[in-house]
Length: 141
Image (cartoon, rainbow, N blue to C red; front, top):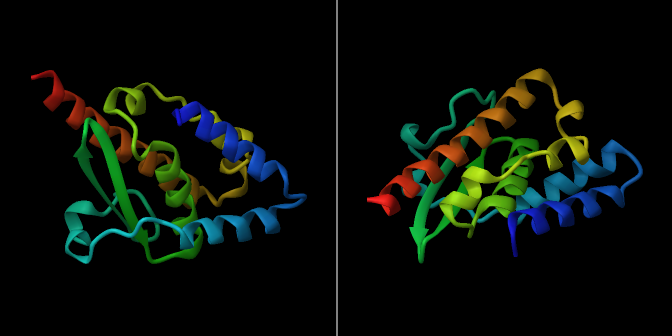
């Protein structure tokens, strides 16, 4: 599935809910399905800077696709990173680099987060893309 198709799927899923309490509950449920990071990768090097909560993100490359795993010590944040991993994991580095993130505004996520969580969201996207850039650079050599 392409990044755009996954984003559209998420937009449709979030549209099913009438209010933001239901959407938060759904995000928490998504967080429970997150492909968890191996404990050996829960290091300071893998912590995302700029997040109020602790968020660890690890990336590996398999068959020219970037595979992300993550974890967080906060349930809402875990849901946010789960959404991002669903969109960006198992995609090529170039597709991740080129991907727009307008779907976040379309599901209304940014406007319903506290300023510190919204900053954390931006930091998560930035880190996902930095991993993709690093892998794309390796592929280009």
